Image 1 (tube, rainbow over the protein chains, first blue to last red):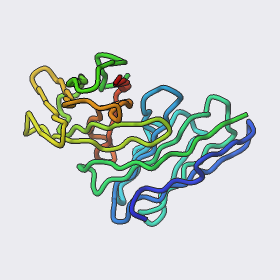
Image 2: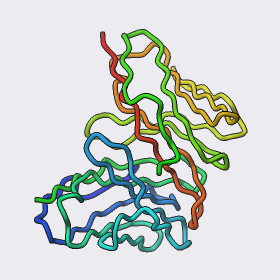
Image 3: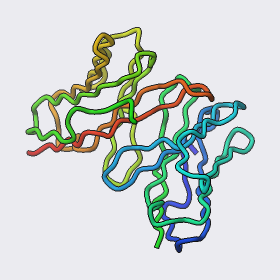
Image 4: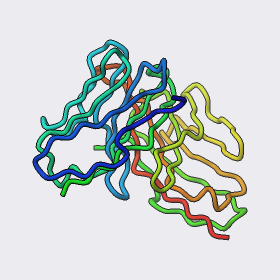
Length: 113
Length: 114
Protein backbone atom coordinates (compact mmCIF):
# COMPACT_ATOMS: atom_id res chain seq x y z
CA UNK A 1 0.00 0.00 0.00
CA UNK A 2 0.92 3.65 -0.21
CA UNK A 3 1.08 4.25 3.53
CA UNK A 4 1.90 2.50 6.78
CA UNK A 5 -0.70 -0.12 7.54
CA UNK A 6 -1.48 -1.43 11.00
CA UNK A 7 -3.71 -4.28 12.06
CA UNK A 8 -5.97 -4.78 13.79
CA UNK A 9 -7.34 -1.26 14.12
CA UNK A 10 -8.99 -2.20 17.39
CA UNK A 11 -8.29 -5.04 19.79
CA UNK A 12 -10.09 -5.91 23.00
CA UNK A 13 -8.43 -8.58 25.07
CA UNK A 14 -8.79 -10.07 28.51
CA UNK A 15 -6.22 -9.36 31.16
CA UNK A 16 -3.48 -12.00 31.09
CA UNK A 17 -3.84 -12.86 27.40
CA UNK A 18 -1.12 -12.29 24.82
CA UNK A 19 -1.65 -9.97 21.85
CA UNK A 20 0.17 -9.39 18.60
CA UNK A 21 0.03 -6.11 16.72
CA UNK A 22 1.16 -5.91 13.13
CA UNK A 23 2.78 -3.12 11.14
CA UNK A 24 3.36 -3.04 7.39
CA UNK A 25 5.73 -0.15 6.67
CA UNK A 26 5.97 1.81 3.45
CA UNK A 27 7.84 -0.23 0.87
CA UNK A 28 11.53 0.60 0.80
CA UNK A 29 11.59 2.23 4.22
CA UNK A 30 14.47 0.89 6.27
CA UNK A 31 13.59 2.48 9.60
CA UNK A 32 10.58 1.36 11.64
CA UNK A 33 9.34 2.72 14.97
CA UNK A 34 6.78 1.63 17.53
CA UNK A 35 5.22 4.14 19.90
CA UNK A 36 2.54 3.95 22.55
CA UNK A 37 0.04 6.72 23.17
CA UNK A 38 -2.23 6.73 26.18
CA UNK A 39 -5.43 8.76 26.10
CA UNK A 40 -4.64 12.47 25.87
CA UNK A 41 -0.93 11.88 26.19
CA UNK A 42 2.14 12.18 23.99
CA UNK A 43 3.96 9.48 22.08
CA UNK A 44 6.07 7.15 24.17
CA UNK A 45 8.93 5.60 22.24
CA UNK A 46 9.02 1.80 22.48
CA UNK A 47 11.41 0.32 19.94
CA UNK A 48 13.26 1.25 16.76
CA UNK A 49 14.55 -0.89 13.90
CA UNK A 50 17.05 0.38 11.35
CA UNK A 51 18.05 -1.90 8.51
CA UNK A 52 19.92 -4.96 9.73
CA UNK A 53 21.19 -3.31 12.92
CA UNK A 54 20.22 -4.59 16.31
CA UNK A 55 17.03 -2.79 17.36
CA UNK A 56 16.98 -0.13 20.02
CA UNK A 57 14.73 -1.67 22.68
CA UNK A 58 15.40 0.98 25.31
CA UNK A 59 11.79 2.19 25.36
CA UNK A 60 10.10 -1.14 26.03
CA UNK A 61 8.38 -0.76 29.43
CA UNK A 62 8.82 -4.35 30.61
CA UNK A 63 9.96 -7.79 29.49
CA UNK A 64 6.36 -8.56 28.58
CA UNK A 65 6.88 -6.42 25.50
CA UNK A 66 8.84 -7.62 22.50
CA UNK A 67 9.00 -6.85 18.81
CA UNK A 68 10.51 -8.33 15.73
CA UNK A 69 10.89 -7.28 12.16
CA UNK A 70 11.04 -10.00 9.56
CA UNK A 71 12.92 -9.56 6.31
CA UNK A 72 13.41 -5.89 7.03
CA UNK A 73 9.75 -5.22 6.35
CA UNK A 74 6.74 -6.30 8.43
CA UNK A 75 7.01 -5.86 12.18
CA UNK A 76 5.07 -7.48 15.01
CA UNK A 77 4.78 -6.04 18.51
CA UNK A 78 3.89 -8.70 21.06
CA UNK A 79 2.57 -8.02 24.54
CA UNK A 80 2.47 -11.04 26.81
CA UNK A 81 0.21 -11.40 29.84
CA UNK A 82 -1.53 -8.10 29.11
CA UNK A 83 -2.40 -5.77 31.98
CA UNK A 84 -4.99 -3.01 32.10
CA UNK A 85 -2.26 -0.37 32.03
CA UNK A 86 -1.26 -1.67 28.60
CA UNK A 87 -4.47 -0.17 27.21
CA UNK A 88 -3.43 2.51 24.73
CA UNK A 89 -3.07 3.24 21.04
CA UNK A 90 0.00 1.60 19.57
CA UNK A 91 1.42 3.52 16.64
CA UNK A 92 3.89 2.35 14.05
CA UNK A 93 5.91 4.61 11.78
CA UNK A 94 8.47 4.11 9.05
CA UNK A 95 10.98 6.30 7.31
CA UNK A 96 13.19 5.94 4.27
CA UNK A 97 16.29 6.01 6.40
CA UNK A 98 17.34 6.99 9.87
CA UNK A 99 17.63 10.64 8.89
CA UNK A 100 14.24 11.00 7.23
CA UNK A 101 10.80 12.02 8.35
CA UNK A 102 8.66 9.23 9.71
CA UNK A 103 5.18 8.44 8.42
CA UNK A 104 2.64 6.95 10.78
CA UNK A 105 -0.06 4.36 10.51
CA UNK A 106 -3.48 4.90 12.02
CA UNK A 107 -2.61 2.87 15.08
CA UNK A 108 -4.07 -0.10 16.92
CA UNK A 109 -6.32 0.75 19.84
CA UNK A 110 -5.73 -1.89 22.50
CA UNK A 111 -8.19 -2.28 25.34
CA UNK A 112 -7.43 -4.73 28.13
CA UNK A 113 -10.48 -5.66 30.18
CA UNK B 1 12.91 11.99 31.35
CA UNK B 2 11.79 13.50 28.08
CA UNK B 3 14.30 15.49 26.11
CA UNK B 4 11.71 17.33 24.07
CA UNK B 5 8.96 19.38 25.63
CA UNK B 6 6.46 22.08 24.86
CA UNK B 7 5.93 25.27 26.76
CA UNK B 8 2.12 25.31 26.67
CA UNK B 9 -0.25 22.36 26.68
CA UNK B 10 -3.11 24.28 25.03
CA UNK B 11 -3.45 27.23 22.67
CA UNK B 12 -6.73 28.85 21.70
CA UNK B 13 -6.93 31.25 18.75
CA UNK B 14 -9.52 32.88 16.56
CA UNK B 15 -9.91 31.88 12.95
CA UNK B 16 -7.64 34.02 10.81
CA UNK B 17 -5.11 34.70 13.55
CA UNK B 18 -1.54 33.50 13.35
CA UNK B 19 -0.59 30.70 15.76
CA UNK B 20 2.80 30.03 17.29
CA UNK B 21 3.52 26.71 18.97
CA UNK B 22 6.78 26.36 20.85
CA UNK B 23 9.06 23.47 21.67
CA UNK B 24 12.24 23.20 23.72
CA UNK B 25 14.75 20.44 23.29
CA UNK B 26 17.65 19.45 25.50
CA UNK B 27 19.98 17.40 23.29
CA UNK B 28 22.39 19.78 21.59
CA UNK B 29 23.55 16.94 19.32
CA UNK B 30 20.12 16.58 17.72
CA UNK B 31 20.29 17.67 14.13
CA UNK B 32 16.86 16.98 12.71
CA UNK B 33 13.45 18.12 13.91
CA UNK B 34 9.93 17.46 12.71
CA UNK B 35 6.52 18.90 13.48
CA UNK B 36 3.51 16.59 13.43
CA UNK B 37 -0.21 17.25 13.57
CA UNK B 38 -2.51 14.70 15.13
CA UNK B 39 -6.26 14.88 14.73
CA UNK B 40 -8.56 12.92 16.99
CA UNK B 41 -8.52 9.21 16.28
CA UNK B 42 -5.75 9.43 13.70
CA UNK B 43 -2.03 8.86 13.59
CA UNK B 44 0.35 11.83 13.57
CA UNK B 45 0.71 13.52 10.21
CA UNK B 46 3.97 15.06 9.00
CA UNK B 47 3.79 18.85 8.64
CA UNK B 48 7.29 20.18 8.16
CA UNK B 49 10.86 19.39 9.10
CA UNK B 50 14.10 21.25 9.54
CA UNK B 51 17.74 20.25 9.82
CA UNK B 52 20.17 21.92 12.14
CA UNK B 53 22.06 23.62 9.33
CA UNK B 54 19.02 25.84 8.81
CA UNK B 55 17.25 28.28 11.10
CA UNK B 56 14.05 28.73 9.13
CA UNK B 57 11.98 26.71 6.71
CA UNK B 58 8.68 27.59 5.13
CA UNK B 59 5.85 25.48 3.84
CA UNK B 60 2.31 26.21 2.87
CA UNK B 61 0.98 28.49 5.66
CA UNK B 62 3.53 27.02 8.06
CA UNK B 63 6.99 28.13 9.08
CA UNK B 64 9.40 26.35 11.39
CA UNK B 65 12.07 28.31 13.22
CA UNK B 66 15.06 26.72 14.89
CA UNK B 67 17.21 28.50 17.45
CA UNK B 68 20.12 26.22 18.28
CA UNK B 69 21.62 28.68 20.74
CA UNK B 70 18.73 28.29 23.15
CA UNK B 71 17.58 24.90 21.80
CA UNK B 72 14.17 26.16 20.82
CA UNK B 73 11.88 25.20 17.97
CA UNK B 74 8.65 26.87 16.93
CA UNK B 75 5.87 26.26 14.46
CA UNK B 76 4.05 29.25 13.05
CA UNK B 77 0.71 28.76 11.31
CA UNK B 78 -0.53 31.69 9.27
CA UNK B 79 -4.22 32.52 8.98
CA UNK B 80 -5.25 29.68 11.26
CA UNK B 81 -8.34 27.78 10.16
CA UNK B 82 -10.76 25.57 12.10
CA UNK B 83 -9.25 22.58 10.28
CA UNK B 84 -5.96 23.33 11.99
CA UNK B 85 -7.46 22.31 15.33
CA UNK B 86 -5.43 19.33 16.50
CA UNK B 87 -2.59 18.32 18.78
CA UNK B 88 0.82 19.38 17.54
CA UNK B 89 3.99 17.51 18.44
CA UNK B 90 7.60 18.34 17.84
CA UNK B 91 10.02 15.45 17.41
CA UNK B 92 13.76 15.34 17.78
CA UNK B 93 16.17 12.98 16.07
CA UNK B 94 18.35 11.47 18.78
CA UNK B 95 21.20 9.03 18.32
CA UNK B 96 20.66 5.56 19.84
CA UNK B 97 22.57 2.32 19.74
CA UNK B 98 20.63 1.35 16.61
CA UNK B 99 21.23 4.65 14.87
CA UNK B 100 18.85 7.48 15.44
CA UNK B 101 15.28 7.57 16.67
CA UNK B 102 12.56 10.19 16.83
CA UNK B 103 11.62 11.27 20.33
CA UNK B 104 8.41 13.25 20.79
CA UNK B 105 7.38 15.96 23.18
CA UNK B 106 4.05 15.94 25.01
CA UNK B 107 2.13 18.00 22.48
CA UNK B 108 0.18 21.25 22.33
CA UNK B 109 -3.55 21.23 21.68
CA UNK B 110 -4.53 23.98 19.25
CA UNK B 111 -8.17 25.05 19.33
CA UNK B 112 -9.40 27.37 16.59
CA UNK B 113 -12.73 29.10 17.05
CA UNK B 114 -14.75 30.69 14.27
